[in-house]
Length: 143
Image (cartoon, rainbow, N blue to C red; front, side, top):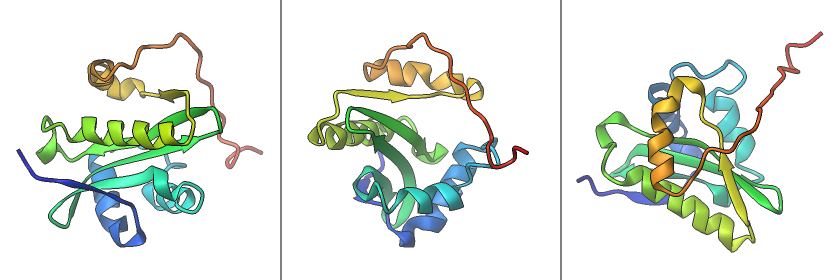
C-alpha cells in the first residue's frame, strides 16, 4: 500500500492534477478542462480543493462545493497505479469532514454514465442513488 498525504491544492500542483484528470477523465467535456476547473475553483473554495500526494506526485484529487446547505463532490480521481488502496475513500471522507465543519447537512455527487462502474465505490461510502433528472445547457456555445 502506497503512503500518501492529503494537502490543499495550490498552483504548484497544477501539472500533476492535469495529468491525473487526463488519465481519470479522458472523455471530459470541452467546457470542463482542468485548466479552467482548477483555477476557477481555487479562490472561492480553497479549503475544499485538495489532492493526495505520494512523495511529490499527485495521485488523487477531489473538489467540493457548498451552497450554505448542501455540498457537492467534484473531480474525485485516483491514478490507476494507486487505486484500491483506500485513497479515494480518504479523499471523500476528508471532503465530508470539511463540508460538515462548515454546516453542510447533505452531500451529493453526479456520476456520468460512462463512469457508472464507480457506483459501488460510492455506495460503500454510504451514498445512495437519488431519483432525479439532471439537465445542463452549454451557454457558452449558445447563440
